[in-house]
Length: 306
Ligand code: G3H
Ligand code: 13P
Ligand code: ZN
Image (cartoon, rainbow, N blue to C red; front, side, top):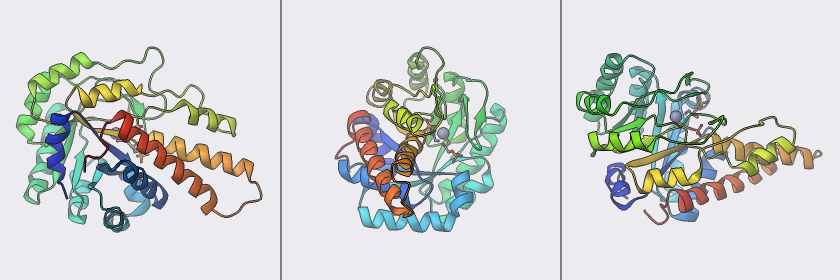
């Protein structure tokens, strides 16, 4: 089975990207795996600190191991947005393949300090570290930022040299959640190019990269939800980022949530007599799997890269 470090190089060399998909329960884990099975794709399975509190590290590791064994795909377990050395250490000790230390809300020097500390623990155990420089707009449970502060290319070089992080999440105009743009939808590919010039050997990561498919937004609103004006990153930007640039990992969580809720809401309204959880969940799993397969094959171009 190919390693995560194999994909660091191969994805950038051959012009494809790996989806990093968040799971929070059995259903989302299964759906992501089913989607990757359809396209024979490698993928990163992410859990946030919120998901760690919800499921517990031991459950997460056991669920992941079972999935990996069953699906026989290059799947990698990743801690998403670890905010402290302590949570990263716990994930490493629990057997994760990689961790993200998100010091993006700290000062440059403090971010370097905590990232370096995580790297020195992780690297002794052969675990990879993703760091973040620059701030993404948007609000999540545990991840919030009011302004969008693009990654400074020269700072990126100094940061990578001083910390020894394996991959770097960059801020080029994406944001977390379902409301990514008010006006024109654009990403700063000019900044990305400059970052690549400074750190050509560092695989880059794009957070806040859900495309917010409008069919699910409409379905949610049609069946009693209220997410008017939700808009995501155009898929052509995501394809460009991973095929023409060094973006090797593309994070999607919101798209999974939207797909799940679209099917759940529809099913609850259309079948008011049903009290069997498996029925709406099965519909949600099938739809998420198709959505993931489409992303893998059409957007991230990683079909059959196992
Ligand atoms: O980028 C963060 C993910 O979407 C996780 O969100 O903290 O609500 O689990 P969460
Ligand atoms: P989205 O909110 O765009 O899905 O981003 C998820 C993410 O970046 C997880 O770290
Ligand atoms: Zn993120």
